[in-house]
Picture: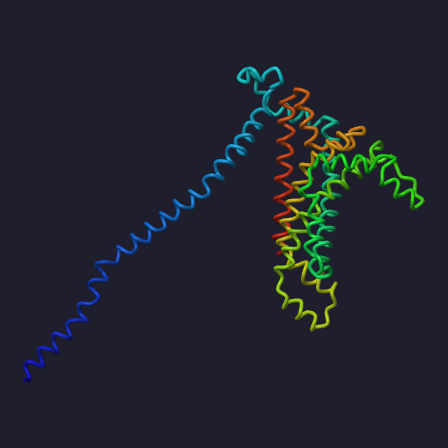
Length: 326
């Protein structure tokens, strides 16, 4: 019986020694399967993003490249029938428009819209978001819809309403008259026309700011406010010391979106005042549109490229400034 026992023991001991061999010989197979799975996922991902890439290239990259090329030529309205007959003049168009008083006035008007309009819009949107998040809990959806309606309202209808409201005999001057104040000629005086256009633009953008800030406020953990309240911090102390810093990513997004919107302002000054009076409300986008209508296509394209560079510079500066403080 002893030899039999020894033989079974040796055979059973040989099993573990043969174990590692299959794993070493079959190792590359799972790695190849993993690479194949990743490759299929990459193909699937590119399949999802390909429609966006095509649309972006066709409707953004190609027009921008064409505008850049045309801004370096002397193309006019008569050259549209023979676009290959134009001459390349280099940066001459840029020097011409940058020295133009009309373009400089349009740049100053646009800068005024951005400097005044963006902070006012963001501040009003933030206050409304705070009110909806903490103060106005009843009928919150109704108030949110009321504030957001101007965003989705037809801009032409809004401009017509604004023209009526700010005429000398309109409701705004009627309200001021009831308070004993003589209302100005809003749309006939350069300074007051800028105010009327700014009010319309701010009114139409407040809803976007409010929705974005409200989403940011609702992402702040409630435990943070409760802990601060237990430490004795009041409401405004919690808002300034905790809520505002925690909303920095949202503030970055809103500031970039609003700056781009005000830099490209066109509908409001075009529909309400047509850029007047005395070009007081002519923005860069309105100037570019006018030059194209006059047949000065090269100047129009050069102006649009200058506006594009300004938008890129301002957006990049905002991102770097707010990220550096994050």
